[in-house]
Length: 264
Image 1 (cartoon, one colour):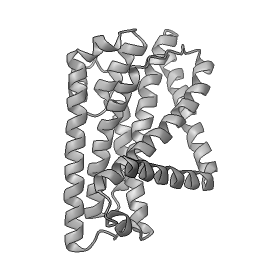
Image 2: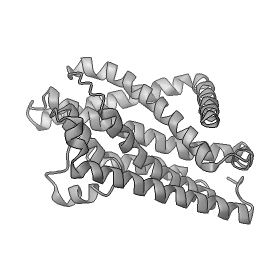
Image 3: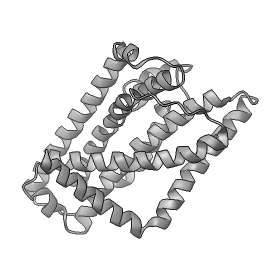
């Protein structure tokens, strides 16, 4: 337990130093995603002839912010490993005797905390501007963490691919962007049966729908916890995490065998 705590603290300290050095880029990135959502809601309002009310905006914001955290964590995970390789620290970190799973757990916790704080700041700006109601339900944290967890499984698999083929972090952002549309983050896909069916096998989709049920429709946590969708979310997250970790461990062993772990 203490080992995990020290690793998480070290990752947080490192991330703080990095973001202080690139604060202008951080500010620009925040503004970009805030403006993007404002533009999207404006388009939706035009398409619906002004019927995109505050509850519809809340529904879209829930999906958008959840996707932003998941997408940011996916990109950050892949980029962090690529940076370790580029700066010559990958072999030191991954061969230090620490469990790979423990290192990834520490980074994952750090990235989730970091991007959660970022989207909270985004919400504090967006919600007053669009008059979106503030709904806080403690149980939604469980759904939120399970939802983001599935994206980490995908990130681990991509990281493993990077260790073998190198420089694949460039595909992470397009993949994360695709999830914005195919997971129903901005608007539910229930009206498009084919896409809706496919989305249930992708990360984020089930979790975002459950968050909307809790925060927009007012469904209680325990009512959701005994639903088939909740079990589907747990299975979805577990499958992605297991596959991602298995792919990553296989890639690490393969890279060690051929001596390319620190190459980039």
